[in-house]
Image (cartoon, rainbow, N blue to C red; front, side, top):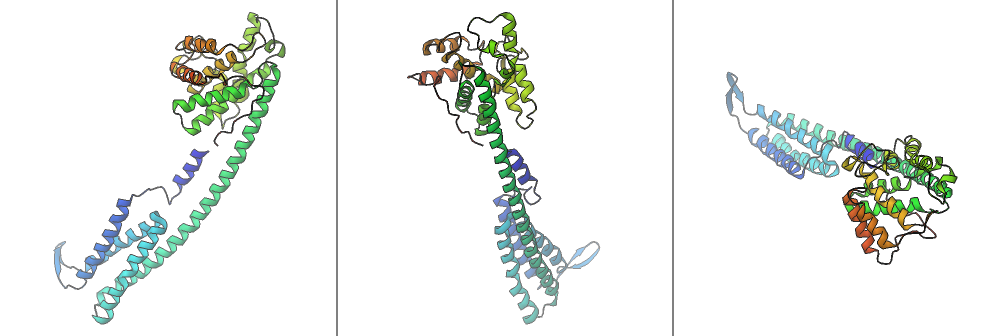
Length: 356
């Protein structure tokens, strides 16, 4: 949504160009020099040989004045309030000199320039007022867009939480699993240096990574003994089910990616078996480490939570085979920093707020 807001700002015909301060100074200098040139030339009676004949030097004043006025209008359009103030000052500063030249020195050749300056001042005022109206309208539209975006994200969070609750309710031994995976995934993403927006995407993808388990029978999910080959194939299907469920959320395609590929292995031996190595979507490679960590550090129907040193050894063992080495190393850092083994299943898990 932030990208959409930037597109609106950049597509506005008043802000397509982004002139620099150097350009602004150049326009001021050019306008001042043009005024000096006009003042000097209008008081001379000389001529130059051009296009096969003699041309009065005063004829050039109109051309130079036109360019100067165009510069003033450019300043108003692209430099907004500052440009308007400077342009207005520059335009009005020429009037005293022109009036003195016309009425005191009787230089009638200045009269066209006087009328041109008057028109320019009116144009500057009109353009600035029009500019303000357009900017107000744009700001109003952006405010409405942001409000709509906020409501959409709130609805998405509520929907995601409802789905997570439905998933965790199926497994009596993994309450809070999805929330913990989301939290661990976001920590890895932050430590890796991803942007706030990317970390938010990782969080929600981690939150919904197991949504496909809604379609897996409870008897298989909560089975205490070893799964049969057939039951294991059904469990594996949750990644494809998750893909099907979340693929309709076109505004947030990353959640579908996380659900579909979080069981891919770095060595290519995972499932659904479409990718390996760096070919696995980054978001899925992050979730894969976080998911495995939480699975080992939580109670399961077939075993209790593993000791921290055992979990660490398994993560290290899977580095470069099951997991992307970069994200496995970050997970190992987080484990080493967690000296009290607090990063594990708790009785109550409260979802963290992530940046919109």
